[in-house]
Length: 378
Image (tube, rainbow, N blue to C red):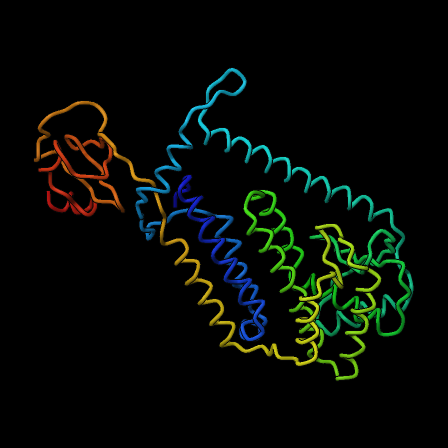
């Protein structure tokens, strides 16, 4: 497994294509119904592809003689910066690295600052809240302890924290079963490991800040997390209870008034009308039944798409001359090893360089598929 500038570029291109494919499927009602509860597997494959933009042994190299070659010439062009010369590629890499490091630092700082603010918020001590948490834990077969705090700076109920989850409640007066619906919704986010997925998306957005597709991925992941939690919660509700649950979501949405919350929060009713329509449809129809064959199919499809996205890497064309000077290499001790799109040249049994075209003075040498084939012949 190797990581290079071309594997990074190819990984971004293939990941972007997969993100657009995922967004198309999730916006289509039939596609959403088919992937259902297992859409997160597909999104996880995209996250892994972006996080590890490597080339593997099965990766095939394609040569681009125009676009990438011209791009490479631009990246190698030298410019003056601060009295020093560097290539355009080095300058862009420095800008990328500095900006990504800064955004990661701000993300960590925001997490720590938000944690400090939350710790100063008063706890909810009402018996109804504690009873609702215990009820949800019994239904889920869990024993996790959750803190519920009053946070007037949030517009809608939300959950925060990777290790010690805290449910944040705004100043809205909720009544009756509203507390149960809200707490179960946020607790299911934690039990579905949505906070970890949220953090992974935020890290990718910080690193690949220059790729607009990562923000689409973050939005798609947030939509799927909300819909999956809604379907899990509504699976055991009666039609009347489903209406009450949807009314609770609408109430929270109106209180939020479409205002944007902190990116580190998972909110109860994010202000997105198109996603809300999908959420209500899934809650009412209960169409996301859990079937093993769908889970297996989703996992297999995700693996195949990941392999397909990592199976091709595009590299620029090099009109490359082998280094140094030599003439008439001995065909008994010198040879070529065929690789994906190029050839490794061994002079007198020692690696000497590589080339993309076979021409003089190595045109008469024998070509092997691998070093093992060379040794077996001997």
